[in-house]
Image (cartoon, rainbow, N blue to C red):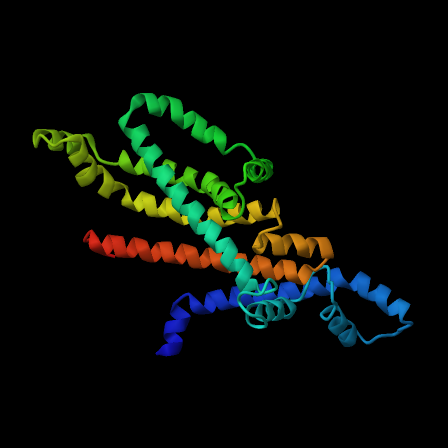
Amino acid sequence: MAMQGLAGGKTIPILVVLGVIVLFWYAMAVVMNAPWQQTLNARANLTNVPFTEFVGQTFAQDKPVLPAPHQVVGAIWTGLFGAAVTAPRSLAFHAGITLGATLLGFALGTLLGVLLAVMIVHNNASDRSLMPWIIASQTVPILAIAPMVVVGLGAVGVTGMVPKALISMYLSFFPVVVGMVKGLRTPEPIQLDLMRTYNASPLQVFMKLRWPASIPFLFASMKVGIAISLIGAVVGELSNNAGGGLGVRLLTGSYNGQTIQIWAALFIAAALAAILVILVGWGEKLANRRMGVRA
């Protein structure tokens, strides 16, 4: 029964795809690391190296072009459990810094997005004047804005988490405001007319009709927003390597040619984003349950 459950579910297809990706990754590691390994063997006067030994050499380079999966896993394990959490060389330490900026930026971005959406839905002047600027704001590359934000705020003494959180907010407010505008406008005219027949105030229409109708759109936007909040925090750290964070690990790894360190930081960032999206999904289920929505 257990095997039938696995075969009928998603577990086996996911594992098959994962296995294919890992095999392809190992094959590409051999291809991409082979030229440098041939140079190393020539310098050491090693000739006629058996193929299996040569493959093993490409998987054991200190600074490979493409590290093998087990090298990345080893770096993640060492980074998470090989040092104290408070040590600057700990991946958990840097992940914690990035997580703090991400959550603060996400909270600010969500609040800003909801407030702007409420203004746009309830005020025609705001709809005509704000929405074009909100859309235009996302056409500016974040890589161009992030250094200006970090340097500008640093000039007035604002450093640390705040500049990174503001960059995260800049990215995360957009999906929230777009989703919430759509959600707040979901009620049908006949439903609004019914509220008017009840002599409901604008606040009552908002709280009893528009807001509950917008909740699914809010959580869908928040899932996108929290993922790109993490990207914003990492980009902010790339602009200032003084405070730590996964972006700083990526930057120092790039400076020193430590590709294993880069890949380990990337996987930690991806895992962090996945966990945050799952947590938002749990929040959505909890909100739906409180509102009486059946799964």
